[in-house]
Amino acid sequence: MFLARKKRSKLAVVPYRNHSKYKWKIAGLYQSGKRVRRFFEKKAEAETFVRQLEIKAENLGSRATHIDPRLHVMAIECHDKLAPYGKTLADATDFLCKHLNAVERSCTLEELVTGFLQMKELDGAKKRYMEELRNRLGHFQRTFGNRTVATISHRECDDWLRGLRQAPRSRNNYRRVLSVLFSYAASRGFSSENPIAKTAKARIADTPVEVLTPYQMQRLLEAATPETLPYFALAGFAGIRAAELSRLDWSEIHLDRGYIEISAAKAKTASRRLVKLLPNLGAWLAPLAQKTGSILPTNPRVKIEATRKLAGIKKWPQNGLRHSFASYHLAKFQDAPALALQLGHTTTSTLFAHYREVVEATAADRYWSIAPNKSDL
Image (cartoon, rainbow, N blue to C red; front, top):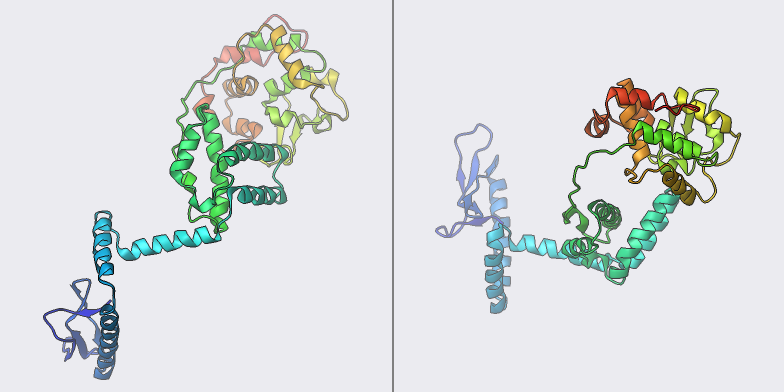
């Protein structure tokens, strides 16, 4: 608020001669201890401005005489507590009012999760994603279900995430899902902020990509049955994700045209892509091709694991088939943009970060020569 300095009894309108248009100024006008300059074309305008300030000061003074002395003390104490943070009583009041308003408008976490899941279903979220949301949010809900959303702090969320005692990647997956939930809460006014944004992200060690050797890939395909062979061939020679393979139909494998169609509904990225059928992959699939039907066998997990054991691969690399495809493809064909399209990546940064120079060119030649009736590798 504008006030007159203590040494002056009141503000004054005085002539100003340093400007061709503005002829009057206010003397003795200060704000927050600093002099403020205000200029006017006409004296009447300046006098009106001064009178308005005097009325405000009078009104404030009359109110001040009725303030409880304890409020004066409280104001000084609160001012002193806020000073080290560079904040004022007005800042604190605005912050608290925003929080109380959010609490008043808020709901329980259980109600929030219910509404959030309904919204995701209406938006067309995939079944697999919905299952992940229900699983991870259900775990969080067992701890905070009856709590008002606006009262859940980032410290509580941080402690809960650390208390999971899970691998860093899994913990970060929980954090990602919770962040989406609380962003939704903030957008609907159920929370004044997203508390997950202030939680710590677990550090994931940058471990080298592990791949199958050409010999192991050959052994795997030899051990496969007609039921399981399409899965291993498509994963190892086309790099199709396991989740996408579980939804892939034979009608989407176009041997005559030389490509595999991953529709938007079945792709992880919800974006349609065409995966090129390389010659050796076509040779493996041709004798088994069907017009329609899932490429997976019945009871796939058990049969796929049995094939791995029969092939004698004791340690299975994490995401080994897709990583093998990407590493050997990059080493053989040296075409990162084409490989990114095959994998469903939007950029080539991941390829160079994880798959570059993982395998030698000679090993890549052996890998891409693996075809039916060739067991000399």
